[in-house]
Image (cartoon, rainbow, N blue to C red; front, side):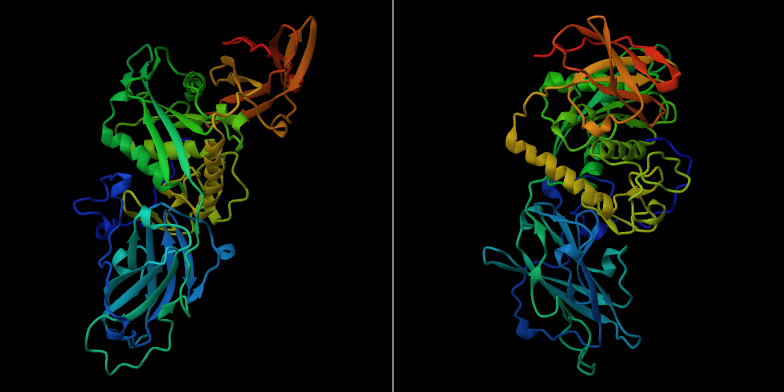
Length: 524
């Protein structure tokens, strides 16, 4: 992630004090088992016959589910079927369900009760009430200006039907008001499915601290960051990824050591790839190196990922990234972490004015990189405005996840989670030659087991191999990374005799000799 001088916009994100567990403020963290967002009401057995339908033409305008981004499931009383939804809802994840209202000019302020009925596939029914004094319009950025219901992960399962209705909240005071001709039940006509996906969704992340000595005045050790600061990395990632679980490891007792100055954060990719091999890591693990470089970054970059890999097992060497720890700007380090992991999940940059990112995804549908949908953090209890927040794959702040990115990541997490059914994964048959052409003019070259899709190697560049006195030019891929480093990747040919990589060839620029830091792997 490249650092930017773009001005920060004032976010409309508001603290959600009302639905945080007792004693927890928005800046605190809770464990996954403690995220159960409580409503003003609870299960109730009040008889429907004792209640009076809301009068005075108040209307339900929308019912939304939010596990990170708003997903409308009913609008103006009409159920929103799956194909018409903006993104997916997953099971076994803490969930905020909200409803919004509108009322006429002659509205009489008073208490109105929203009743949510959930019908479960085992035949049980749960009923929740939330009573609000309605004296101002509904507004998504203020929890008290919505009807809201918190569902814990264990209660969010497939095949739940929902129905929400409005009732008078007081025993008297409404008698002179006309019966409503507006939408006071949603969906109209009775319960409809929430539409919860049944897939198992899991991420596996290893964060490796770095003990860093640049040979000068910078001596740092990120393995000593506090447990609270470590937890924020996990919270930020969990909130903005459609996952039920993150298998998390922060290697305090086994940091990487770097005793020479880093010319680029990409120089931490090889140690991470080596760790993957040493650990025997499954291909759906993500590795991230965290280093304090005594500054905001290197070559204007606070983080760099090893490219944008596809959802294939062979591309596991690319599921590594590195980023800086900023003791005096911690939130930027947490945002950078989410951004760089996003690259390793297959996400490209997204344009925003003044951001300066390159390789932007032209398919992003919203103007200037804004999220265009209300966001909500289910760990840190904060709302994120759709017009004042940018997608986290931009270079602009403040940022959050958009529903477009949520959908793309949902697919990626689902695919990688499905690999758990076929572990251990077979050893990769191929081998990749990787080169870093650093901004200071130096180069680093090494090999790792793995592979990439054939179309990845479609550029004009190539790598020349020598075998038995002959030469063989293999197509290579050139990528411009976030700090300006150029990375070369080429498949190593599987020859039945000794051979070596001798040069990378850049068209008219001629041949450039290669010095390998590792040995070529002999074919089996």
